[in-house]
Image: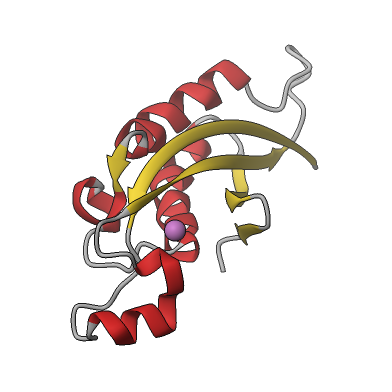
Length: 137
Ligand code: NI
């Protein structure tokens, strides 16, 4: 079993809030990320897949194909977008980094399998100090 990771980047706007909370309650729970006028992050995404080395190519997967899948299924939906409003797989969810990682996992899992590998980890870095990792469970 071998692992390989592809990095992609996107920037997006969001707001962490619950509509059933007042602005004051939202600020108490979510802090500055609850600003009613939105704010953005420069996200970094690390997608790790696992599997066996193809003896013909010496590769686990073709990284160009993996990158294309990530960009088509995820980056194109997120980059320069408002996560709360415009991203189909985040509809009805709080726009947290945790939910984003799970959403990205669900968007990619099946497509990675089609490449002959298995999705292992989705790592979403929201800021210098904060990142989330999801392993599918
Ligand atoms: Ni934020």
